[in-house]
Length: 370
Figure 1 (cartoon, rainbow, N blue to C red):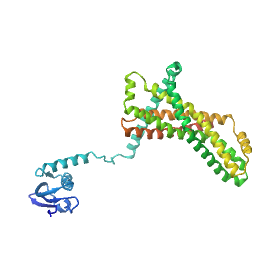
Figure 2 (cartoon, helix red, strand yellow; figure 1 turned 45 degrees about the vertical axis):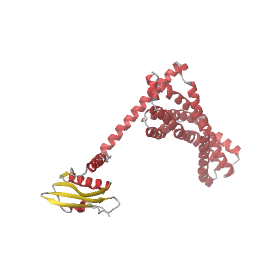
Figure 3 (cartoon, rainbow, N blue to C red; figure 1 turned 180 degrees about the vertical axis):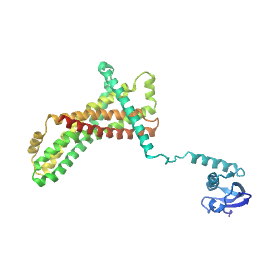
Figure 4 (tube, rainbow, N blue to C red; figure 1 turned 120 degrees about the horizontal axis):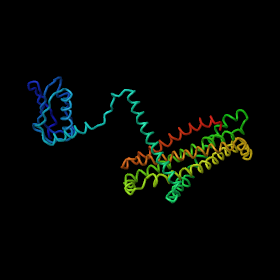
Protein backbone atom coordinates (compact mmCIF):
# COMPACT_ATOMS: atom_id res chain seq x y z
CA UNK A 1 0.00 0.00 0.00
CA UNK A 2 1.36 3.47 -0.87
CA UNK A 3 2.02 5.74 2.12
CA UNK A 4 -0.66 8.24 3.05
CA UNK A 5 -0.26 11.92 2.28
CA UNK A 6 2.03 13.71 4.70
CA UNK A 7 3.05 17.30 5.27
CA UNK A 8 5.74 18.24 7.78
CA UNK A 9 6.70 21.75 8.83
CA UNK A 10 10.31 22.23 10.00
CA UNK A 11 11.38 25.62 11.39
CA UNK A 12 14.19 27.32 9.47
CA UNK A 13 15.20 30.61 11.00
CA UNK A 14 12.11 32.83 10.95
CA UNK A 15 10.45 30.66 8.33
CA UNK A 16 9.15 27.15 7.70
CA UNK A 17 10.14 24.39 5.35
CA UNK A 18 7.07 22.35 4.40
CA UNK A 19 7.90 18.88 3.12
CA UNK A 20 5.21 17.08 1.12
CA UNK A 21 5.31 13.38 0.43
CA UNK A 22 3.28 10.21 0.15
CA UNK A 23 0.21 9.47 -1.90
CA UNK A 24 -2.14 12.49 -2.19
CA UNK A 25 -5.61 11.26 -2.98
CA UNK A 26 -8.79 13.17 -2.31
CA UNK A 27 -10.45 9.94 -1.16
CA UNK A 28 -7.89 9.42 1.61
CA UNK A 29 -7.20 11.32 4.85
CA UNK A 30 -5.29 14.52 4.06
CA UNK A 31 -3.28 16.89 6.23
CA UNK A 32 -4.63 20.38 6.83
CA UNK A 33 -2.42 23.44 6.62
CA UNK A 34 -3.83 24.83 9.85
CA UNK A 35 -2.71 21.78 11.78
CA UNK A 36 0.63 21.56 9.97
CA UNK A 37 1.45 25.18 10.78
CA UNK A 38 0.18 25.02 14.33
CA UNK A 39 0.70 28.26 16.25
CA UNK A 40 3.74 29.33 14.24
CA UNK A 41 3.70 32.63 12.35
CA UNK A 42 6.55 32.30 9.85
CA UNK A 43 7.75 35.16 7.68
CA UNK A 44 8.61 32.81 4.84
CA UNK A 45 7.43 29.38 3.72
CA UNK A 46 9.36 27.09 1.41
CA UNK A 47 7.54 24.06 -0.03
CA UNK A 48 9.39 21.02 -1.30
CA UNK A 49 8.46 17.49 -2.35
CA UNK A 50 10.28 14.47 -0.88
CA UNK A 51 9.02 10.99 -1.69
CA UNK A 52 5.93 12.31 -3.45
CA UNK A 53 3.90 9.50 -5.00
CA UNK A 54 0.68 9.82 -6.95
CA UNK A 55 -1.30 13.02 -6.47
CA UNK A 56 -4.49 14.70 -7.63
CA UNK A 57 -6.33 17.97 -7.00
CA UNK A 58 -5.97 17.57 -3.25
CA UNK A 59 -2.27 18.46 -3.49
CA UNK A 60 -3.07 21.49 -5.63
CA UNK A 61 -5.64 22.65 -3.11
CA UNK A 62 -3.20 22.27 -0.20
CA UNK A 63 -0.48 24.28 -1.94
CA UNK A 64 -3.03 26.96 -2.83
CA UNK A 65 -4.12 27.17 0.82
CA UNK A 66 -0.49 27.70 1.86
CA UNK A 67 -0.03 30.46 -0.72
CA UNK A 68 -3.32 32.09 0.22
CA UNK A 69 -2.35 32.12 3.91
CA UNK A 70 1.02 33.64 3.04
CA UNK A 71 -0.67 36.46 1.12
CA UNK A 72 -2.90 37.22 4.11
CA UNK A 73 0.02 37.08 6.57
CA UNK A 74 2.41 39.13 4.36
CA UNK A 75 4.78 36.17 4.19
CA UNK A 76 6.73 34.92 1.19
CA UNK A 77 5.98 31.52 -0.32
CA UNK A 78 8.50 29.61 -2.42
CA UNK A 79 7.05 26.65 -4.34
CA UNK A 80 9.74 26.43 -7.00
CA UNK A 81 10.86 23.02 -5.71
CA UNK A 82 7.50 21.43 -6.55
CA UNK A 83 6.87 19.69 -9.88
CA UNK A 84 6.08 22.04 -12.75
CA UNK A 85 2.63 20.56 -13.29
CA UNK A 86 1.66 21.26 -9.69
CA UNK A 87 2.83 24.86 -9.93
CA UNK A 88 0.95 25.33 -13.20
CA UNK A 89 -2.32 24.02 -11.77
CA UNK A 90 -1.93 26.13 -8.64
CA UNK A 91 -1.45 29.19 -10.82
CA UNK A 92 -4.59 28.40 -12.82
CA UNK A 93 -6.58 27.93 -9.62
CA UNK A 94 -5.31 31.25 -8.33
CA UNK A 95 -6.37 33.02 -11.55
CA UNK A 96 -9.80 31.40 -11.42
CA UNK A 97 -10.32 32.56 -7.84
CA UNK A 98 -9.36 36.13 -8.76
CA UNK A 99 -11.99 36.18 -11.53
CA UNK A 100 -14.82 35.16 -9.24
CA UNK A 101 -17.56 37.76 -8.82
CA UNK A 102 -17.36 39.16 -5.33
CA UNK A 103 -20.24 41.18 -3.95
CA UNK A 104 -19.32 44.77 -3.32
CA UNK A 105 -20.52 45.54 0.19
CA UNK A 106 -18.81 48.92 0.27
CA UNK A 107 -21.74 50.69 -1.43
CA UNK A 108 -24.10 52.46 0.88
CA UNK A 109 -27.81 52.86 0.36
CA UNK A 110 -27.49 56.27 -1.30
CA UNK A 111 -24.99 54.97 -3.86
CA UNK A 112 -27.17 51.97 -4.68
CA UNK A 113 -30.26 54.15 -5.16
CA UNK A 114 -28.25 56.50 -7.36
CA UNK A 115 -27.02 53.68 -9.58
CA UNK A 116 -30.54 52.27 -9.93
CA UNK A 117 -31.90 55.71 -10.79
CA UNK A 118 -29.19 56.21 -13.41
CA UNK A 119 -29.98 52.85 -14.99
CA UNK A 120 -33.68 53.73 -14.99
CA UNK A 121 -32.97 57.03 -16.73
CA UNK A 122 -30.96 55.20 -19.38
CA UNK A 123 -33.83 52.77 -19.93
CA UNK A 124 -36.32 55.64 -20.25
CA UNK A 125 -34.02 57.44 -22.69
CA UNK A 126 -33.67 54.34 -24.87
CA UNK A 127 -37.44 53.82 -24.82
CA UNK A 128 -38.12 57.44 -25.77
CA UNK A 129 -35.58 57.26 -28.59
CA UNK A 130 -37.14 54.08 -29.93
CA UNK A 131 -40.63 55.58 -29.75
CA UNK A 132 -39.34 58.54 -31.76
CA UNK A 133 -37.93 56.24 -34.42
CA UNK A 134 -41.24 54.36 -34.64
CA UNK A 135 -43.11 57.68 -34.95
CA UNK A 136 -40.92 58.82 -37.81
CA UNK A 137 -41.36 55.45 -39.48
CA UNK A 138 -45.16 55.71 -39.10
CA UNK A 139 -45.09 59.18 -40.68
CA UNK A 140 -43.16 57.72 -43.59
CA UNK A 141 -45.81 55.00 -43.88
CA UNK A 142 -48.54 57.63 -44.20
CA UNK A 143 -46.62 59.52 -46.84
CA UNK A 144 -45.60 56.47 -48.88
CA UNK A 145 -47.86 53.53 -48.07
CA UNK A 146 -46.62 51.61 -51.10
CA UNK A 147 -43.30 50.90 -49.37
CA UNK A 148 -44.97 49.26 -46.40
CA UNK A 149 -44.65 45.47 -46.14
CA UNK A 150 -48.34 44.59 -46.09
CA UNK A 151 -47.68 40.87 -46.48
CA UNK A 152 -45.60 40.78 -43.30
CA UNK A 153 -48.22 42.86 -41.49
CA UNK A 154 -51.04 40.49 -42.47
CA UNK A 155 -48.96 37.50 -41.38
CA UNK A 156 -48.26 39.10 -37.99
CA UNK A 157 -51.95 39.96 -37.64
CA UNK A 158 -52.76 36.29 -38.04
CA UNK A 159 -50.12 35.25 -35.52
CA UNK A 160 -50.97 37.80 -32.82
CA UNK A 161 -54.71 37.94 -33.53
CA UNK A 162 -56.34 34.77 -34.79
CA UNK A 163 -53.81 32.45 -33.13
CA UNK A 164 -54.35 34.17 -29.76
CA UNK A 165 -58.14 33.66 -29.74
CA UNK A 166 -58.12 30.36 -27.76
CA UNK A 167 -56.06 31.62 -24.82
CA UNK A 168 -57.91 34.97 -24.77
CA UNK A 169 -61.24 33.10 -24.80
CA UNK A 170 -60.31 30.92 -21.85
CA UNK A 171 -58.82 33.70 -19.72
CA UNK A 172 -61.67 36.16 -20.39
CA UNK A 173 -64.40 33.62 -19.70
CA UNK A 174 -62.78 32.58 -16.42
CA UNK A 175 -62.30 36.22 -15.39
CA UNK A 176 -66.02 36.81 -15.95
CA UNK A 177 -66.83 33.76 -13.85
CA UNK A 178 -64.55 34.93 -11.07
CA UNK A 179 -66.01 38.44 -11.01
CA UNK A 180 -69.56 37.07 -10.90
CA UNK A 181 -68.81 34.63 -8.07
CA UNK A 182 -67.05 37.35 -6.07
CA UNK A 183 -69.89 39.81 -6.54
CA UNK A 184 -72.51 37.21 -5.68
CA UNK A 185 -70.94 36.62 -2.27
CA UNK A 186 -71.76 40.19 -1.20
CA UNK A 187 -74.87 40.98 -3.22
CA UNK A 188 -76.80 37.87 -2.13
CA UNK A 189 -76.69 39.12 1.46
CA UNK A 190 -78.67 42.22 0.45
CA UNK A 191 -80.96 40.67 -2.11
CA UNK A 192 -79.28 42.52 -5.00
CA UNK A 193 -78.45 39.50 -7.13
CA UNK A 194 -79.29 41.29 -10.36
CA UNK A 195 -76.53 43.83 -9.72
CA UNK A 196 -73.99 41.14 -10.53
CA UNK A 197 -74.58 42.12 -14.15
CA UNK A 198 -73.55 45.70 -13.31
CA UNK A 199 -70.35 44.59 -11.57
CA UNK A 200 -69.30 42.19 -14.31
CA UNK A 201 -70.22 44.54 -17.16
CA UNK A 202 -68.45 47.62 -15.82
CA UNK A 203 -65.41 45.74 -14.53
CA UNK A 204 -64.96 43.84 -17.76
CA UNK A 205 -65.38 46.76 -20.15
CA UNK A 206 -63.49 49.40 -18.21
CA UNK A 207 -60.67 47.30 -16.74
CA UNK A 208 -60.42 43.56 -16.94
CA UNK A 209 -61.05 43.03 -20.66
CA UNK A 210 -58.27 45.29 -21.89
CA UNK A 211 -55.87 44.43 -19.04
CA UNK A 212 -56.23 40.65 -19.32
CA UNK A 213 -55.91 40.80 -23.11
CA UNK A 214 -52.81 42.95 -22.73
CA UNK A 215 -51.24 40.56 -20.23
CA UNK A 216 -51.93 37.57 -22.49
CA UNK A 217 -50.46 39.35 -25.51
CA UNK A 218 -47.46 40.53 -23.47
CA UNK A 219 -46.61 36.96 -22.50
CA UNK A 220 -47.39 35.51 -25.91
CA UNK A 221 -46.73 38.10 -28.61
CA UNK A 222 -44.33 40.48 -26.89
CA UNK A 223 -41.98 37.64 -26.01
CA UNK A 224 -42.29 36.27 -29.55
CA UNK A 225 -41.32 39.63 -31.05
CA UNK A 226 -38.29 39.88 -28.78
CA UNK A 227 -37.21 36.31 -29.53
CA UNK A 228 -37.59 36.74 -33.29
CA UNK A 229 -35.65 40.00 -33.48
CA UNK A 230 -33.06 38.78 -30.97
CA UNK A 231 -32.48 35.65 -33.04
CA UNK A 232 -32.11 37.77 -36.16
CA UNK A 233 -29.59 39.99 -34.39
CA UNK A 234 -27.62 36.96 -33.21
CA UNK A 235 -27.58 35.68 -36.81
CA UNK A 236 -26.37 39.13 -38.03
CA UNK A 237 -29.43 39.52 -40.24
CA UNK A 238 -30.15 42.97 -38.84
CA UNK A 239 -26.55 44.00 -39.56
CA UNK A 240 -27.05 42.85 -43.14
CA UNK A 241 -30.16 45.05 -43.46
CA UNK A 242 -28.26 48.07 -42.16
CA UNK A 243 -25.42 47.34 -44.58
CA UNK A 244 -27.92 47.39 -47.46
CA UNK A 245 -29.25 50.73 -46.24
CA UNK A 246 -32.59 49.34 -44.94
CA UNK A 247 -33.77 50.67 -41.60
CA UNK A 248 -34.67 47.79 -39.24
CA UNK A 249 -37.50 49.87 -37.77
CA UNK A 250 -39.17 50.22 -41.18
CA UNK A 251 -38.54 46.65 -42.26
CA UNK A 252 -39.07 44.69 -39.04
CA UNK A 253 -40.66 46.80 -36.32
CA UNK A 254 -43.37 48.75 -38.11
CA UNK A 255 -45.28 45.74 -39.54
CA UNK A 256 -45.39 44.15 -36.08
CA UNK A 257 -46.39 47.43 -34.46
CA UNK A 258 -49.25 48.01 -36.89
CA UNK A 259 -50.44 44.40 -36.67
CA UNK A 260 -50.60 44.31 -32.88
CA UNK A 261 -52.15 47.79 -32.66
CA UNK A 262 -54.95 46.72 -35.01
CA UNK A 263 -55.61 43.31 -33.47
CA UNK A 264 -55.56 44.24 -29.77
CA UNK A 265 -58.87 46.21 -29.89
CA UNK A 266 -60.57 43.34 -31.70
CA UNK A 267 -59.34 40.82 -29.16
CA UNK A 268 -60.37 43.16 -26.34
CA UNK A 269 -63.94 43.47 -27.62
CA UNK A 270 -64.06 39.70 -28.00
CA UNK A 271 -62.73 39.32 -24.45
CA UNK A 272 -65.36 41.75 -23.15
CA UNK A 273 -68.16 39.69 -24.69
CA UNK A 274 -66.82 36.45 -23.22
CA UNK A 275 -66.37 38.05 -19.80
CA UNK A 276 -70.00 39.19 -19.78
CA UNK A 277 -71.04 35.75 -20.97
CA UNK A 278 -69.11 34.16 -18.09
CA UNK A 279 -70.99 36.35 -15.64
CA UNK A 280 -74.26 35.36 -17.31
CA UNK A 281 -73.44 31.68 -16.85
CA UNK A 282 -72.83 32.16 -13.13
CA UNK A 283 -75.97 34.25 -12.74
CA UNK A 284 -78.12 31.65 -14.46
CA UNK A 285 -76.65 28.66 -12.61
CA UNK A 286 -76.01 30.06 -9.12
CA UNK A 287 -78.26 33.11 -8.72
CA UNK A 288 -81.17 31.83 -10.86
CA UNK A 289 -81.23 35.02 -12.92
CA UNK A 290 -82.66 34.50 -16.44
CA UNK A 291 -80.22 35.38 -19.26
CA UNK A 292 -82.59 37.96 -20.74
CA UNK A 293 -82.86 39.79 -17.40
CA UNK A 294 -79.09 39.69 -17.03
CA UNK A 295 -78.65 41.11 -20.53
CA UNK A 296 -81.20 43.90 -19.99
CA UNK A 297 -79.47 44.92 -16.75
CA UNK A 298 -76.10 44.90 -18.52
CA UNK A 299 -77.43 47.16 -21.26
CA UNK A 300 -78.87 49.57 -18.70
CA UNK A 301 -75.53 50.06 -16.93
CA UNK A 302 -73.26 50.30 -19.96
CA UNK A 303 -73.06 53.12 -22.48
CA UNK A 304 -70.83 54.24 -25.32
CA UNK A 305 -68.30 55.84 -22.98
CA UNK A 306 -67.48 52.46 -21.41
CA UNK A 307 -66.88 50.95 -24.84
CA UNK A 308 -64.73 53.95 -25.78
CA UNK A 309 -62.62 53.53 -22.65
CA UNK A 310 -62.02 49.88 -23.49
CA UNK A 311 -61.05 50.69 -27.09
CA UNK A 312 -58.70 53.53 -26.13
CA UNK A 313 -56.93 51.37 -23.56
CA UNK A 314 -56.60 48.43 -25.94
CA UNK A 315 -55.04 50.54 -28.70
CA UNK A 316 -52.46 52.01 -26.33
CA UNK A 317 -51.77 48.62 -24.71
CA UNK A 318 -51.16 47.04 -28.12
CA UNK A 319 -48.69 49.77 -29.07
CA UNK A 320 -46.84 49.46 -25.75
CA UNK A 321 -46.53 45.67 -26.04
CA UNK A 322 -45.22 45.87 -29.59
CA UNK A 323 -42.74 48.63 -28.74
CA UNK A 324 -41.44 46.81 -25.65
CA UNK A 325 -41.06 43.48 -27.48
CA UNK A 326 -39.29 44.96 -30.50
CA UNK A 327 -37.04 47.18 -28.37
CA UNK A 328 -35.85 44.29 -26.21
CA UNK A 329 -35.31 42.17 -29.31
CA UNK A 330 -33.11 44.82 -30.94
CA UNK A 331 -31.19 45.23 -27.66
CA UNK A 332 -30.58 41.48 -27.26
CA UNK A 333 -27.08 40.09 -26.95
CA UNK A 334 -25.70 38.02 -29.80
CA UNK A 335 -26.15 34.65 -28.13
CA UNK A 336 -28.83 32.11 -27.29
CA UNK A 337 -28.78 33.20 -23.66
CA UNK A 338 -29.17 36.81 -24.76
CA UNK A 339 -32.26 35.93 -26.79
CA UNK A 340 -33.82 34.25 -23.76
CA UNK A 341 -33.06 37.24 -21.53
CA UNK A 342 -34.54 39.57 -24.15
CA UNK A 343 -37.79 37.58 -24.24
CA UNK A 344 -38.04 37.64 -20.45
CA UNK A 345 -37.26 41.35 -20.32
CA UNK A 346 -39.89 42.04 -23.00
CA UNK A 347 -42.61 40.39 -20.91
CA UNK A 348 -41.59 42.23 -17.74
CA UNK A 349 -41.33 45.57 -19.53
CA UNK A 350 -44.66 45.12 -21.30
CA UNK A 351 -46.57 44.26 -18.12
CA UNK A 352 -44.93 47.14 -16.26
CA UNK A 353 -45.90 49.59 -19.02
CA UNK A 354 -49.45 48.20 -19.01
CA UNK A 355 -49.82 48.79 -15.28
CA UNK A 356 -48.43 52.32 -15.49
CA UNK A 357 -50.62 53.17 -18.50
CA UNK A 358 -53.70 51.74 -16.80
CA UNK A 359 -53.07 53.85 -13.72
CA UNK A 360 -52.61 56.96 -15.88
CA UNK A 361 -55.84 56.20 -17.72
CA UNK A 362 -57.71 55.73 -14.43
CA UNK A 363 -56.64 59.17 -13.20
CA UNK A 364 -57.24 60.81 -16.58
CA UNK A 365 -60.71 59.37 -17.07
CA UNK A 366 -61.67 60.32 -13.53
CA UNK A 367 -60.58 63.91 -14.13
CA UNK A 368 -62.47 64.05 -17.44
CA UNK A 369 -65.52 62.40 -15.90
CA UNK A 370 -65.59 59.56 -18.40
